[in-house]
Image 1 (cartoon, one colour):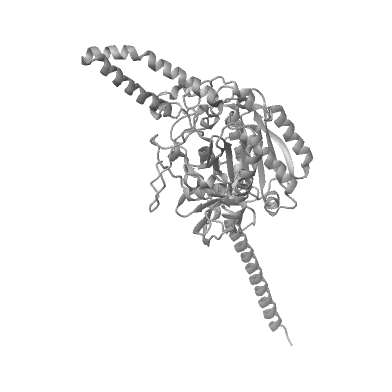
Image 2 (image 1 turned 45 degrees about the vertical axis):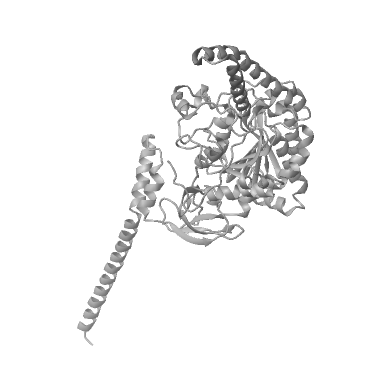
Length: 557
């Protein structure tokens, strides 16, 4: 579904990132690559000169100077081309290549990556970072130290069997409440480890300050924060972008525009774990941490035509607000000259397909951003404290955004007072937010300072609409829905049942339907019958009284 451009709003032109894949490999490796390229060009120089001399019948001296100039221009242009970008890495083929390769999703160029070049700097740059064993120990140590506000659990395992550990932080961890949930995911790409370091620091900072910092206390007491430090531990151990099978996890999710990754048999276990996770927990907001640029990226990541241009989603304004929340809280992200305001639409930067953030928004009702938190993909470990200070308030404010903005509330039935798992829609925005089943709670993120027409719906109940003026803080609006007719409510209640059971269950179903559909009729019949019996009794008593009076008048005085 192609969305029309937003009327009356122009989006600034954003230069594409020219960060190279070899940025973290050091100047020596870049010079080596340049040297090999130059030798290849020079080896062809003599042959080209002879061919041109034969075709053009020009003097050798003229050809020599012309060829040197041509080679110089071409070689300079070749070196200036970007070989990779932070979010996309080795993006692989064009859109037509995706469509031509539908029969073999596992080898689609968008997902399978080229092998990284060997670099002597790999060992040096990894020194000081937590290994996967160190990370597991740090997570479990946190769980013991802060057990009163946390729980530790795993959502699955990587290809190589490394547990994907999650830290949940809340005043009631592990309990279902009518509160919004937010998640952070780090290390999506194995060669971008800054996120896993920052997220462990975030968890410990919350533990140390939740009793004295009002913002942190609000997060702990009024929401559930889930932190997955590393979704790609195998890629980290191999110091490469993809997982153990060299698959880019940020191209492995089902895509809305093209049938990429629809084959569940080729889906990576890390991807499947995230998808199952979101089917069990209803997240309101989310962000993944990447490296190689400094920008907050928001949906859509892809376009329907495969071209690079601004492609807005229904909640474009809200996503821009959330991205700006992170960018403006950062030390210098919002000052970017490459990305105005420090934010960018994913498809306008460059389109990708099978991305995690688009899938979150479409299939899980979760507003997710892709955060590039470091210009260098793999900086030296002594830079982590500075990067933490630059990103600390951004991480806290984004997590708190599910509390500080939007409209929140619950949906109830007027006849029984029970919570309803209804739906919330906003007039003019083609997107639906689901309310929870246990508490009927909903959490709808919106841009502050605007007027909205909010509608609550539930099959079998009459919809209700209200208009709100959303200020700078979040607003609470509860809905009490009146039931439709009994027949309509019953038909909705049984529409999703499995009616192919045994004969006893079929009989029970038929009896329930019989009594439900005709209950009002039975009540009326009983009342009429009761009235008929009373009236008949009264008539009988009246007749007896008259007869008794008549007999009395015939008796002698």
